[in-house]
Length: 136
Image (tube, rainbow, N blue to C red):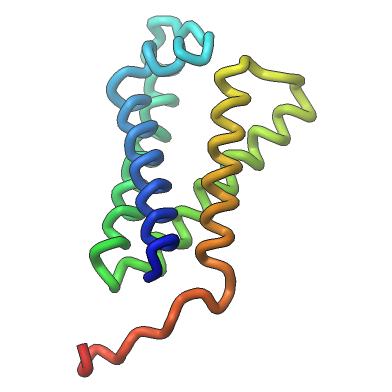
C-alpha cells in the first residue's frame, strides 16, 4: 500500500476504534459531549453499547489490514462502509429531522473528510496486485 493508503486506513481505524470504545465504555460521557443526556435505562444503554462495540471491532479490522495482507481487502471494505454509511445516515437525518447539535455536525464533517480520503486513496485501480503466496 502507498503512504496515503496506509494513512487513510490507519486514521479510519483509530477513529473507529476510539469512538466505538468510548461509546462502549463511557456512553453517558460520550453522548453528553454532543449535548445528549442519557437516562439510566438498561435497554437504551444496551442499544448504544452494542453498535459501539461493533464500531470498535471494525476499527480493529481496519488496523489489522495495515499489517495482515490477508485482511487488507476486508479492512478497506469495512473502512469505506463505516465512513460512507455514517455520514449518509446523518445527511438523511439532517433532511428529515433538521439540524443536530454543533458537535454532531462536526462529527459529520470529520466522517465526510475521512470518507473522501478513503475514496481517493482506494479509488479503482489504486491497489497494486500482490504477488502469489508462493512468491512472498
